[in-house]
Image (cartoon, rainbow, N blue to C red; front, side, top):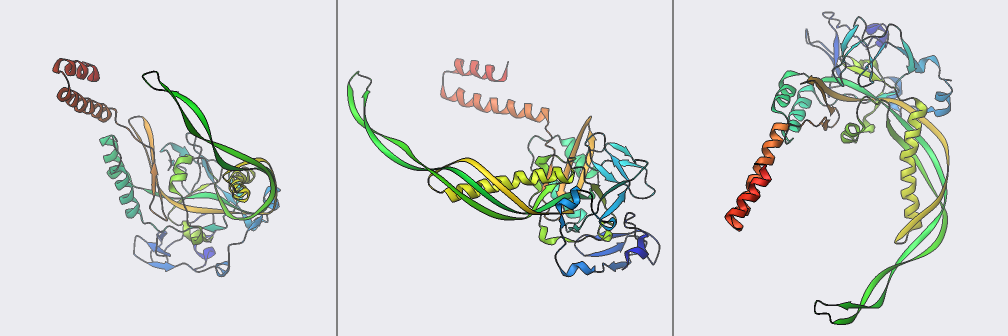
Length: 386
């Protein structure tokens, strides 16, 4: 199907049903658009770029704003004052709740030009499957407030959202200096004294390291180093959702976003490259240690030359649930490729206190059996604070 005929512009992400006029939405896992009103379906047409790899863009062109108009787009956004998410608003919508923290947000009056996504990983996990995964995760938590668990399971529906990421490719060549350590052992006599005051001599084995200066070069080509392009989601949540299957990336089509929200990037391209370099440097350090060899390694200097840097802006799918409960914000995120769940860890003070009390009783009972009753009773009273 032709995007221009359905939506008027890619920024709209609205695709009227040809049968009844209602909005079509992308159906996770099926690769088609569905009308919830009349049941009409339409397959997505493969774009010309689908036959090959998703094209990369030279990093320098992105930094120096030399991208053609076709690689950028105008976005109508709203900045969440609580978590900092930049959410793209659909036409005609002026206010909503932030999908990450449930804070009410209002659309900004203007638009912002941003780099257009090159790739998108379509939703594979349905909303029902994501809800089941979240329920299993909540049920596995110890000491979670019962009211919150019930509210999360029944009181809120999950919302599909595409999260922004950068990917970076680069060639690296690193010259290093350091030392290789070889472990060996020596024995020496030591004098020890026993409880009776008698002394004796025994041999003690001690570890030694023989160091040798080394230098060398390692090289690595990095492909698709993935960096989150938003700080709305805590880093711990993002790490828990990994890994993402980037082999499932498709050339960007607005049809994939039909019926879903999308977050726009707030981490700039150069900030993203700084984070990618940190990931690369950690890998290069492991390469150097492997190249040094031996039992121990010390790295004294590294000089890395980076070339051929390219990037892509991609969107990855997630289901989110965010709400306020007893004055606090809670959020849960489900990887819509794998079903992995991450979220804020709620605690129940009442359940923790009850568990501590029960543990004290168990320990106290053990002490009661194994020692004098008066002493056991005093110990138990001390443990439970009575």
